[in-house]
Length: 124
Figure (spheres, rainbow, N blue to C red):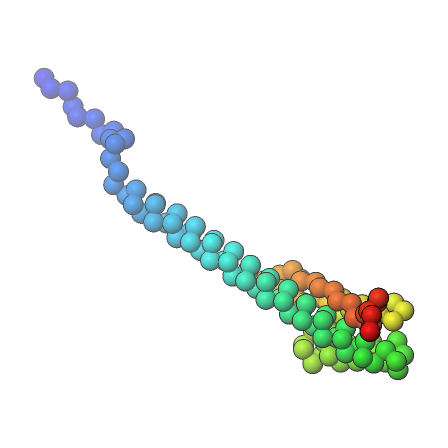
């Protein structure tokens, strides 16, 4: 009498493994795409925050002769026109320090600071 063939699956059988490999490749690709999109969004937000801080600081420094409150009001106006509401203005002697915060599209925030005022130690 012959032994019955076993129904155990052959461990060397690779049917269906391409599906698993393809599924994992899709997961890796989607993860990399999401990470790239978030990184790009964070870089754009950081550049926007720096641009707002720079321009608002220069505008405030130009109006500093009218007083600190007027200078900070001008800085807030520049930031508002650039669609950024979260700025901080500090007058430090003849310098103006602006700190801007811009929301990142997928969560988080980018921050930047700028200082503007007369050059010190400049020789004529």
